[in-house]
Length: 87
Image (cartoon, rainbow, N blue to C red; front, side, top):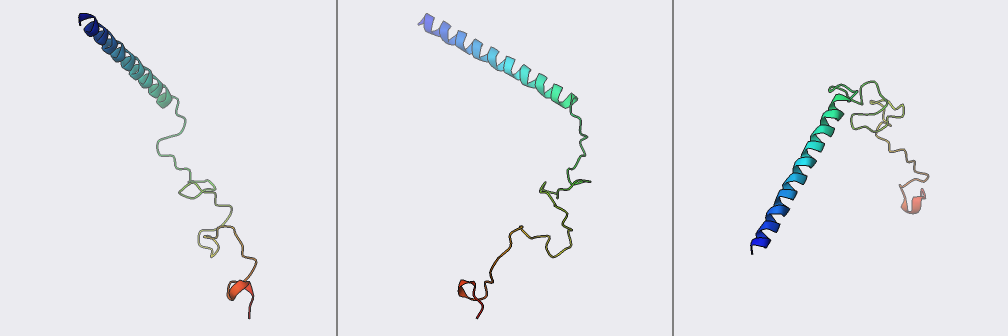
């Protein structure tokens, strides 16, 4: 029974050591990433770029034009009559 407790204690200490080393490594990497960040905190990709506020490309469409919400698909036939045929 004493051997089992020693084994469990050793496993627990090894687990704590691994967690501590992982935490130190993560903290070090995070600090290095924060120091090397080249963009300011107030950067917005939609300022002066060709994307909208959600990051989608604008493709030269003006925001107030009637085609601004167009998905880029065009319909080749009329849907006013069944089968696309105008009566």
